Image (cartoon, rainbow, N blue to C red; front, side):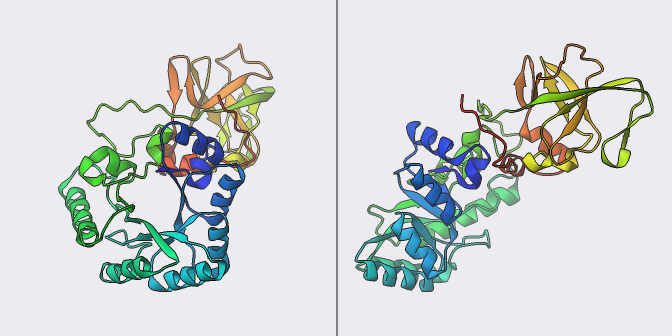
Length: 341
């Protein structure tokens, strides 16, 4: 299962979905009903699981209409789905999530068998999957993370070993679980961040060649020559220490470049790293190009990605902003054009 929620982690959900299917994915995972509808409107026909909870009858009815599989976390949701299926004289394909230690979505362990049996005994519901989610799968190998992941697997096994699993996909592993241990694979794995080219496990010893799928570029729209001692952007938090040449590039925090990165990141032009200066604004940001005389208006600047022998990654930004790679990628907004190469 290719996880393409949050607009394909900022990459464009339809583009990622079609590429993942072409690459061998059997199904897709999304977070919201609207995300699923957008994929169906884009003519994506494979099974799609809504990983978030849908509890409203109207939402679940819409889910059936668009042939999306809802995640069920309790018996009340199953009753609603059964009634909707009866009214529409259709089979409603669903999946059950079990909370084995994430303490988020999913039914309680003690309620899992009752929920699963109810679905299996229904003439209108068809169980297509049983799954759970790892809480510490992406942590570095240590006794605590390994022990808790093993505990989650044991809890999951305690339920699924009692279930007749014909035509049911059992799945537990996210990207981290997929890369960490084949014993976590079961019938299917849910791969998210890894299909976008990032390893979720820091300092993992495995020799993995993951190539980031996304680069972020913007054009220089204006060049300014300023004296020493000139304040730049809101708050004048950056003051030029020399006569400087500054470039304005047409991208800002409304596009997903976090304001907290102001004055911390560098960008690339023909392999040369150049510092971003001043506060990042809604639509613009400034870079110091004093040491890059070849830059002219219209020049393409690389914010994320590879240029020459140098590169800047979402992991770099995450480290500088105190965030995580997932948040950086998911932050890129719809108004930022996507160009598929």
